Image 1 (cartoon, one colour):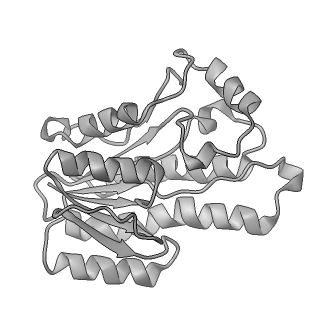
Image 2 (cartoon, helix red, strand yellow):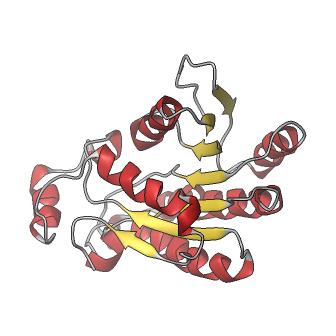
Length: 227
C-alpha cells in the first residue's frame, strides 16, 4: 500500500514511517523538516501543515504518479497553560496545526483516495478530550474538533473509512516538558495505568487499515481503557 503520513520528522510520525516501511509499504512523509529516513520506499515532502498551498502542490504531484491508499494525520502540537494564561495566538496556532491541518489534508486527499480499493483516513485525537484535562483547553478543543470532523467525514466520504485514535501519554517530544505529576495524574485515570507504547498505536492503525475493516468507520478508539 501507499501511505501518506504527516508529522514524520520525529515521535509517532517517524515511528509509523519506519514501521510501515519495514512491512514493505511505500511511505510518503510530510513535515517541516526532513527526518532523513534512508529507505528506497520512502519519499519526503517538506512543508507546513498550515500552508494550504503547499499541501495542494504536494497532493497534485502525488496524484499524477501514484495512488494513495492511506492518509494518517499525525501532525500536531500542544501547549499546557491555565485557560486564563493562554494567549489567543497560542490557541490559534494549536487550532491551525491540529484541526485545520487535518481538515485541509482530508479535503485535498478525499478525491485521490477514491481511486484506491482500500481508501482509509486515520486521524489523531487524545485521551485529554474525554478526561477534560485542566490546563489544556486549547489543545482539547482542537482534538474534540477532530473527533467531530472524523464522524462527519465518515458519512460524507464513504466508502472511504474515516476513524481516529487517541493515545495515552507516550514518551515523545510532545510531552517532554509536561511535569511528571501531571502525567502520573493522567495515567492514574486509565484502566491500564501505565505509559503507552508506540506499538500500541500502530496496532490500532493496523486494525483500521486492514481490508477486512472496510465496515468500520466514524469510530474514536482511545487507548489505555479511557472512555
